[in-house]
Length: 36
Image 1 (spheres, rainbow, N blue to C red):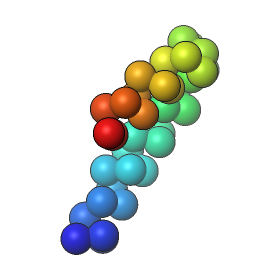
Image 2 (spheres, rainbow, N blue to C red):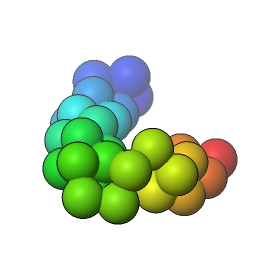
Image 3 (cartoon, rainbow, N blue to C red):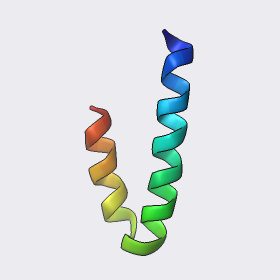
């Protein structure tokens, strides 16, 4: 179960880094809400 979560978190982290470069840190907060 834990192993299945890793690919999801890594993909989200990559998207947050890419989005943060364009939209800034505020957009990464929206992505964190999707996790919860």
